[in-house]
Amino acid sequence: MKVWILTSSRADYGIYFPLLQQMKADNFFDIKIIAFGTHLSQKFGYTLSNIISDGFEIHKEVSGLYFGDSRQDIAKEMAHYSMQFANLWNDFDGDIVFALGDRYEMFAAVTSSIPYQIPIAHIHGGETTLGAIDNIFRHAITLASKFHFTANEVFSERVSDLIGQSDNIFNVGSLSLENIENLPLFSKEEFFEKYKIDLSKPTILFTFHPETIQDEKNKNSIKEIIGALDYLKDNFQIVITLPNSDTQNMVVRNSLVTFGESNNNVYLIENFGSKGYFSCMKYSCFVMGNSSSGVIESASLNKFNINLGDRQKGRLVSKNTIHCTIDKNQIISAVLRIKNSGNYTGENIYYQKTPSKKIIHVLKNIKNFES
Image (cartoon, rainbow, N blue to C red; front, side, top):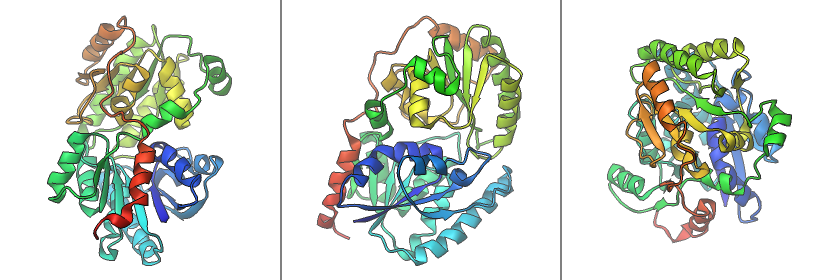
């Protein structure tokens, strides 16, 4: 089976990783990786190198124009990717294409395939994030897809509602949690040697992406957040992973970089990679911000997650997630509430055993499905 993999960022590649490993080890599959988006951007860490260093070949690179981060810039970028992928799909020679998540680049790639009637397999459909325009992209990708691999039965039901049928929908759990089980994480000593960050100190792992619904609020939001982090830095060291290339990302990014560069107890990370990121999460006191990782992955490492604002609003969460408005005093109050709570000991609603093997089982039996 010739399988094309669409990957546009460090985030989706990290989630794909266990599936890619399984496919690479199985002669049944011939995988071709199509890399685009921030993978090819020096500003965002040029994470194409991570894919190559993991032993995977890049079949095609699709470069972006990287206009900027205004609404018009994002719209132009989407149009650019639609044009580039229209040419790519014209030479498509695979059996199936995997798309993951809800990025605008992924939306452009997938929707430009519709006239070609290319079979798309979508991972992480059916979820809801009301504070981001990604919510629209995700559902559109679902409608353009033939096969659906969801992370929870609730999401399977939502996909069924969207497409008007229940065929070819498979609840397999979250692939990223397989990384947590299988990756040999760094010890604190190894982590310090590699990143020069001492995780024996009380640490907050922080990630904040712009809110792309009512994006004009980001300037005030990051001001409130910096105020809270400035107060917290005296009791915690803060590890900040920098944001995606969303609308208004530079407002958020520049504020975090300025804050980080002026404080010795704050560390700025462009790209940890899965092993580094999960190792940092393992030894941190808790996770804070508005990333999907905090919602999906932190519970499996027994960490509480303080979810800020509306970006993840509507997403199904485990009991480790505490929602907090973006207000300096509210954020500090949320931290004080969980500071002495210890580790989270409940379940992760996104967890299932070996989702990659479940996906591969479906693919190997795909001939049994009707067109």
